Structures are given as C-alpha cells and as structure tokens.
Length: 320
Ligand code: HPA
Ligand code: ZN
Image (cartoon, rainbow, N blue to C red; front, side):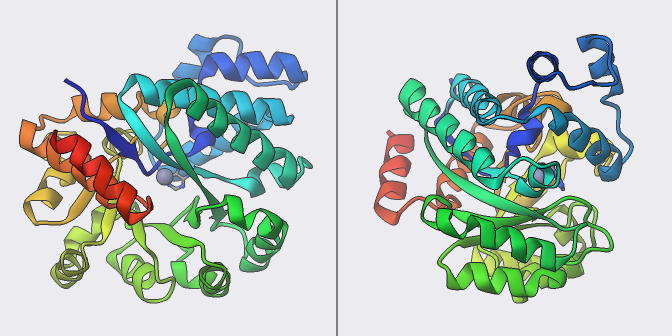
C-alpha cells in the first residue's frame, strides 16, 4: 500500500535521467563526455558532495530551451505520481543556467509549464523554490533575486544549496531577509556535510521555515531540543546520504533516530537520477515500520507550505 505523500526536497536538475541527458544532448547538439547510458551510470560514484556537484552541473549543460525544462519537470512529475506523491515543493538552480547564457525567464517558464503538465496528468499540486548557489557570492544571489522579482507571485520560496562547507548560511543574510520581506518561504540545506553551527545560523540568521537534510544536528543536544520544540521540519534524503558518503550504510540511518527523538523528519529523494531512486525507493531502502511510514507521510504534509485548510484536508485523507 502506498500512502499519499508530499515530496519537499527534490532538485529538478537532479532528476535528469541518463536517457534524457542523451536525448537532450542530441536535440541541442551539446557534446557530453559519455558514450552510452551505461557509461553515464558508471560515472555516478561519488565520495562526497563536491564529487557529485561537479557531475550534476555538467549534466545541466544539456538544458537550453524552455521545452527542455518543461520535459525535465514533467518527467519528474510522472515518476512522483508513480510513487504516490500528491504534492511537491521542488527546487531549481537558476544560476546554473543563467551563467551559461540561458535566460531566467526561459528556465522558469519551462519549469512552471512542467508543473502544470504534472497537475493536468496526475492531479499533483506543486510549489517552486528558487535555490541560490552558496559557492557563488551573495551579490550574484541578489542579482538572481532581482531577475526573479517579476515571478515572485509564482514562487513559493527561496532555498540555499551547492557546496556547504566553507559557505555558511550567514553569507546569505541579506538575500534571505529580502526574500522574507517579499513574502517568500525560506529553506536552506544545512547539516548535510556542514557542522551543527550551520543549522543554528539557518534558524537564527536566515530565519528558515525548514531545514534541508539536517543530519548533523543530531551531534548537538541543544539543537535537537530547539528543533523538537519548534517542530521544525527536516527534509531527509537517505539514498543521497548513502551516495555522498554522509552515512556509511542505511542500517541505523539518522532518519529513524530523528523520529524517535520526536523531530518532524520527512523522507525525500534529493537528486533521484543520480542517487539510485525516487521517493518510493528511499522508503523501500530503510527498514521502516508501518507506523514510521505513516508518521513520515503525516510529517510531509505538516511540513509542507500548503495553506492550513488544505493541509488539514490532506491529513484527513491520510487518516481515512
Ligand atoms: N546538497 C547540496 N546541494 C545540492 C544537493 C545536495 O544534496 N543536490 C543538489 N544540489
Ligand atoms: Zn538537496
């Protein structure tokens, strides 16, 4: 039995399957350093986050036209629907594309179109979160926010991703303050590879509404208390953690410990094309009890940015 679920941590660029990578490389006449789909899959062995990011940004080079962003997004929505997902709040990385000469409007029009296709095909509701690349400077992020301004009413929130260590949340204090004033929700990757201090900064300086990953928060008991008291949502990604060597194995993955500690943890796929599967595969990869699965499904809606009444509707449907 698959429970209805919301996916809250998914990078659209990370849902680019090798088959689509090849098809788009051909369609757009972009050279890629792989001879076959098998070749691509063989390259997906990572020893840390940066290893992965290097290949992930390279893969994104095949995305050029609005249609490409549409097709990428629509293909993700098909996969999500197959896993019982009924609501998604997805990330995109505009700077990865604008820095290659693709316009912001091309990217966002394609993505929003793909989300609409997913709604029409599967009835999946959605929100879009613009992620700033933390390895770039804050001024570049502010420039991206300026480009995004005409689209603010179509955006759910702002996020922070890419290379974590050495790029603390505090580096983006002004950008997040601006986004908050504009009414956008705020989320940030923190505590994936970075220390618990980065999670504190995301909470206290960026004033985030959710923490993406948050695994390393478990190293700091005071932080665990804070996250539990606030019922702060953590968007946890087990297969990603395994692929990027954030955990040694999936036995004893922090997600189950988080639930036992009373934290509002959710399960997500992060970059499913690169890490071996979508949210259903993540659920299957952990030895979860029926109660844990139900809690994760509840947490996914509780932690979503759906309007309160809609949230209650989804929770009632889950209980039924
Ligand atoms: N961490 C940081 N940046 C990312 C990730 C991630 O897991 N996926 C895509 N960009
Ligand atoms: Zn992520």
